[in-house]
Length: 274
Length: 274
DNA sequence: GGGACGCTGTATCTTATGTTACGTATTTTG
DNA sequence: CAAAATACGTAACATAAGATACAGCGTCCC
Image (cartoon, rainbow over all chains, first blue to last red; front, side, top):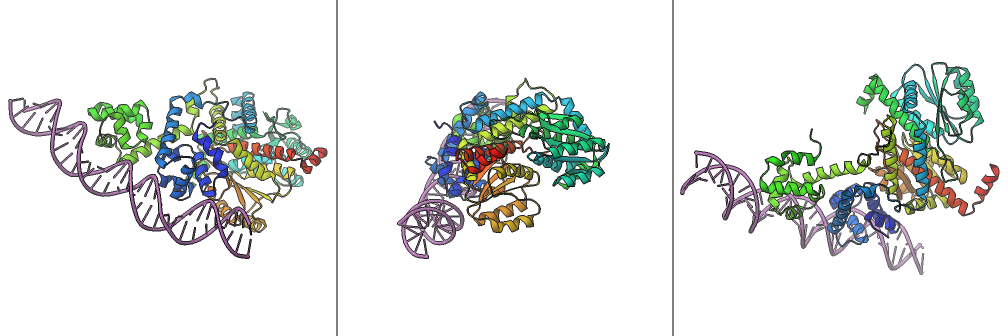
């Protein structure tokens, strides 16, 4: 049963030629507003010509463009009048993606339920106070999270380093690390020996460790000053790092806010550069 | 402070003549839809003439009718893009992390609402059928997502390459790319010139492009075979890539499942290695 | 009660929007 | 590899939309 135009589109998008597909994707991307604009604006947004837009709406079964717009408006009207219908229609997505999404959302809620605001604020403060250097590192699958966090933190403050490459390379960096420094480690099952060794060495040097791990806790938790335990279970062959990712983003935001509040010169300079 | 057009109207409705007041009341009655229709329809709904409608919008301070409609559309866009403000779950705790989490969860729901199972399945199939090579690349902040996806895909199938480093390095890899290959690109605002150039070149070589972008669509969408538009807005100084991350994980899972179902030898070998 | 002012609608005009026809490029098929 | 079919864009066209000028009407004030 196809009720909305959006469904109609995603149903037929596979059979469309390239240009019309661009039109469809553009419309879906911020549905349904693009469809309410003029043909010229729609075509410009999609990067195709006007006739392609008209062929697109014709393929959807509309006689002309105004008829298509009326249909969108009717749909929008129904939607605006009953906002309740927007809140998660369970029948809407019964496919393969849904269980995965639901599990991921649950994971996030659970993760944050076990994570107090104070704890997050403490970690953010620790990362924001510029006493020493910040190092980030991750495991086989979680290293991208370390990179993601490093990419942001490195912009708002100096001395942020992502440790990449081989174990021997990290080890050499241990020389630079001391009591005033922070090491952010991402480690989920299966926990990597190399990371554990590295964390232990860093801990011995007095480095403060912030650990992102799963609910079963990496052995590194022994050495960590702060432990963030994220839920990772999803109906998939792989574990999900999404909850940890969101915590990382939250932390990035919190650190940024603290630095802004502290009136960090770097942040102001940054604004002017943008 | 007057922020919405609705407020503007109720602010000035007292000073309006009878005809224009009817127009105002009609618009407010089912706001903002009537204002998006034509002047003729608006006037018919209000029971007044077209010029009265035009005088009405002129009194509100708009130069002409299209300008008025654009303002309404912008307002509607802002409203539709942040369903968080409409749902407002009171059960959520009031900490600093909470708005961020709520926005992120909304982003994910919205992202998947615009993403049909079929579309995901199509992309997964494209990635799973081993016709050619798979390349992944991302922008400044999204490259970690490309890495994350590459780290997983590279395990379950051969010929998966993450493109890292400088632009000149990618370009040299273009030689290896052809019709049978797939290029997965992550690109969100602000869209990177270098990535656009690269995508264009790859497209010219017939490479099929799968694009992960935000709801405003990177220009690369022009060249893309498949476009995944994720919501990125969160109450933070940074955009959030979390929704795209979850889509990436979902895709990884789907590809894995398809390969398992196809009885890929590599997967079985993998099991025995674990 | 008469005159002036302001509001409204009809009719006309102008603009720009949607539509169509056609030639070129691209892809598909035999 | 050739030929057919399909898809796409440019440009001309028709139409419908918004804008304007003007006259009628009601209302308020003097």
